[in-house]
Image (cartoon, rainbow, N blue to C red; front, side, top):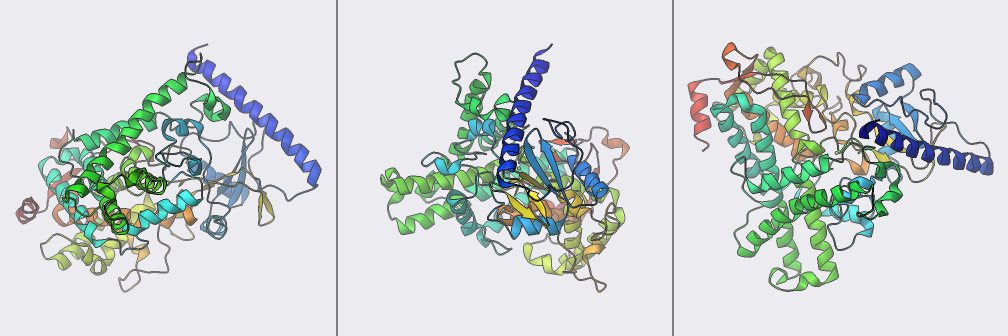
Length: 559
């Protein structure tokens, strides 16, 4: 038996043992309290392992949708060897539980290996126990005071709604213009350009730092840290995920190779967090910083604590905790620039903010290539409003069709088909069904955004579905909000992400035509299915050409 087979058997035995213990405890508990509400419907379960072998490893959102339809229920139950899983297949069910009962459903499932790799910064699940180290990634920590502190820090600079710090708008405009120049010079590498620009955009927004080249040290730090995290993204790959007590095994013990790997990967993650923060803090000290998440928060803090940057106040516990939280939230944004955390690691993707932006923009290029009539209609609207200039955020109200087009991009191909899972500590009841304590709760956004009762002809790319007969936006048609999650755990940067996609999409359409690849585009880059863990389109190429000589001049003038 090879090493993989051996590890799989050991892991399976661990899972089965855990499942047996859970089932035994469950039976004892049931005898103690008597008859309870039934579980939601679900596929037939096997002894001990339950539905462990039924749970799909690819496009699970489609399988969950199929089960919901077969069982005629938008709430279904799965048992993964003792771990209860609740799948929500409708907006109504998701809002009822994840929003109206958000106090109960706002935790995250535990992930021991992720905690070992970055428990003091990213993906830790017991962040409230970490006081003076890098707290934890906002998207994954348990609901509590640390989570609330992180949200407050984020919302100071990026408040809910579209009216976030206008001083940061120029960052996005600058990166959008950089994208246009890159597409003009080397259109065949469009996916590479999207990755670079999205990363540079979030580094600029988070830290006020410039990214100038592909080998930029900030991008390199981000990529190394995210590559390290990616190694542990698949839950169950490491035995410690099935047997959490193993995280206490020392690294020197035989068989504790996961501990030695975690130490190496953790160092990369910590460098990813520390390096850009230190650089941003130095800019504030020198007085040469510009508007950014870190800079704005430091200046606001210094207004309350004069001299903080030049004194030893950082040794004061309360100040150390504040700086740790600030560094953690900025690092979460930084890591979110990579698509490798886009599905938050198969078990639970962060503020997904910029994480899904690159893949969403790839989907935009695919949609325009496949729907030339839609593209031309949007360009006609853009031309009539912009009159040869590039767009700004103030143009959005005058571009309803193009805005509907961007909404349709998010709906047509949700790159986060199942947003970050929720976790229930205590037993609950919903519609007469029992939600067991310790349940992992999944909201199937893919199913919600493909619901034909809400979005007729869901497979078709139709921006008109978001418009009224008079051409204005139809507010009665639900926005593709499920792509960003639900309740208190909804992605706090959703407006930043949608606005970035809007500005880049409108800017591209204003100066470029996107079409099927031509024979001379033989060396075109084909963005493939695997952008980290994002649900990206299959490989495709497209031709990107300037619409006119005037368009070229407009692009060059941005330099």
